[in-house]
Amino acid sequence: MIPPRVVVDERERQSGVPDALSKLDVRVYYSTLHVADYVLSPEIAVERKALRDFVSSVYDGRLFVQASEIARSYRKPYLIVEGDIKELSELTRNLNSYYGAIASVTLVHDLRVMHTSDQAQTAAAIAALARHSRTRSLPSSSFTAAPKANEEPQQQLYLVSALPGVGTKLAKRMLSRFGSPRRIMNLSESQLAMVQGLGPKRASRIVHMLDTPYLTQGGIPAKQEKLVE
Image 1 (cartoon, helix red, strand yellow):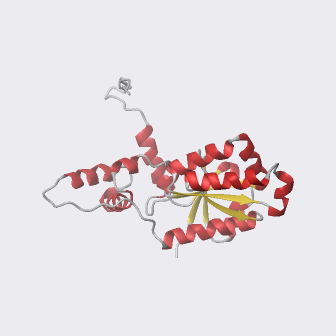
Image 2 (cartoon, helix red, strand yellow):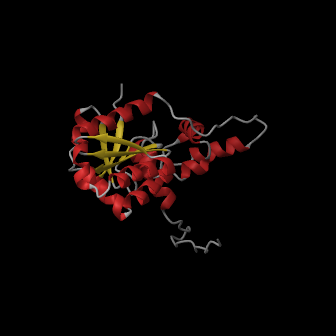
Image 3 (cartoon, rainbow, N blue to C red):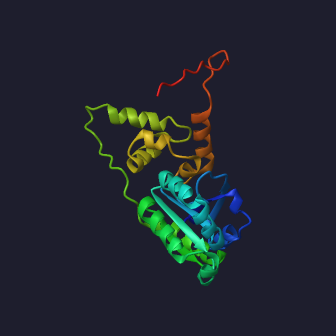
């Protein structure tokens, strides 16, 4: 069986968790992630916080901003709080504020919270999530093939298959999973890299193609019109 893949933010490189993941037969790829610390699939991402940093983020408001961002970007967001829970009473001014923060991000942003004691346990939790995410497919937007007389599905297939390194077979798989070309075009590079059959290199090519300004035949940048809101 092919080992699960996890995209890790560069800032986590020295944390010890990626090394522990590698020892658990997980393939680790590094990237600069703007949201989350670990991306396990296009739907699943993990934010890791040391217990002390988590408590601090409750009081300075960072927790709620980060929870909102990861929830907007991934359908199954996780927060791992790492540290000795016995130290909680020494770190927090009020236990009610700690549990209130957890209740808030859980109910408002559907953020799943896990507790681990150290980097090894964090790696074990992430590895388990990565493996189970492959064996249990997540529900996605339904895509029902329309009758042949309707050309719209063929146009959608043509549009997605034209992306660098995709092709018809992979385009069908992506449309079946994500439901529409719009959702596919809005995936980040790290999310695209986790699509089975795509990988980091082709994901990078797709993002580069989508983000590179169009040049005319003379090599002159096309005039950009201001979009009206």
